[in-house]
Amino acid sequence: MTEPFYGSDYQALAAFDPQIADVLLTELERLRGGLQLIASENMSSPEVLTALGSTLSNKYAEGYPGRRYYGGCAEVDKAEELAIERCKALLDADHANVQPHSGASANQAVYGAFLQPGEKILAMSLPHGGHLTHGTKVSFSGKWFDAIHYGVHPETENIDYDEVERLAKEHRPKVICAGGSAIPRLIDFERFRAIADEVGAIFWVDAAHFIGLVAGKAIPSPVPHADVVTFTTHKVLRGPRSGALVCREEHAKALDKAVFPMMQGGPQMHTIAAKAVNFKECATPEYAAYASAVIENCQALAARLQEHGIRPTTGGTDTHLTLLDLQGVGVTGADAEARCDAAGITLNKNAIPNDPQKPSIASGIRVGTPCVTTQGMGVEQMTTIADLIDEAVTAGDADPEHEVSRRVRAQVTELVEAFPAYPR
Ligand code: DSN
Image 1 (cartoon, helix red, strand yellow):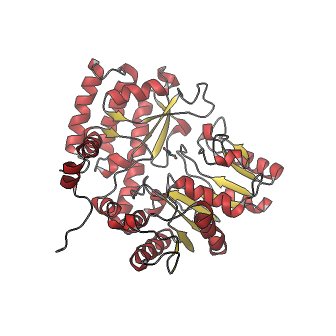
Image 2 (cartoon, rainbow, N blue to C red):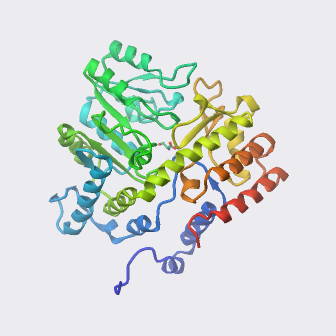
Image 3 (cartoon, rainbow, N blue to C red):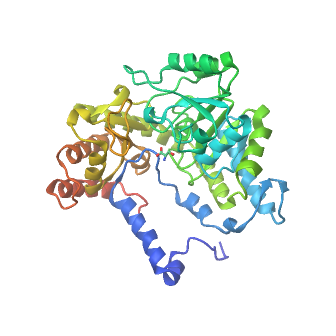
């Protein structure tokens, strides 16, 4: 390249705004210095980050490629067309909309396309693993729509499909939603489709958590079964922080209109370019191997934690996350999160099904392997990580100076130095 590229120039930023430059650098050091086990996070490639830090951020481009409300969109049109085509090919979908700013925005579009205020949706309850935008009272989805919630079976801790069917027949919802943020097992999309067909409902899959595993062909796809599939692009998928949706051709117009102009204004063209880069990455054999390794690692981690008496709900995992019940070791989710944090392990407290604790305390933690797998760790390292989690949770302290915090942190440092994030 002969021209200077404007963007990603850290030195220039540091000269102008040392305070923000310092935040950028210390956040990078935080990422590098500890174990990142939040199931919904990942580490995008430098190529994705370069597209994000580009002058495409400047462009207004309301509308869709070839049909914009502003001039000067020829170049950004190319980026969006590439993103759409790559997304459709990756997920074998009829239609893709790559403009949603986030998973929540993509979900809003589903409500906008298929429901009128006050109409019914059937979705998984948040305390059983659902999501805020699936009809919780604190979200637009529960304030403006009539949400009915299913949960997990008390014995299997897996989705109670009989309950889904019973509630669907009783309430006749316009939309049935599958997916959530703390579901460790595969979802039976065929069963959901059959239930939706029985009551004439739209079948929506919120695949934010697991779409990366689908893209890597590591788990079955919801796309052949669902009317619409929404997702984020920054979780296992490893793209920029954003959202997207794919749908059947018959719903393309309604969903496009619901994304813009109903729910959003100008699309973020730099992020759309970064999504295009990410979809290209996800179509490679390397990414497919990564997606399988994420699951293998998570299964190894869950199995080892179980040996320590930290129980994976549902008995294990088929995906990138395991939801762990800490009641057997007598520690709350909040305490476990704080103790791990002090020891250099970042994870989050999480409600478990039928949790006796309030959500801000919780009886569980959610642990995921997207980041550590990106760093190249394998099943051997998962055993070490499980041992470190166990030590921090059961013997540790929220004080970073506590001897257990220090001891675990030293081992974490050794591990992340052997498998660096964003190698220098
Ligand atoms: N915050 C996301 C997660 O952690 O799963 C869901 O929106």
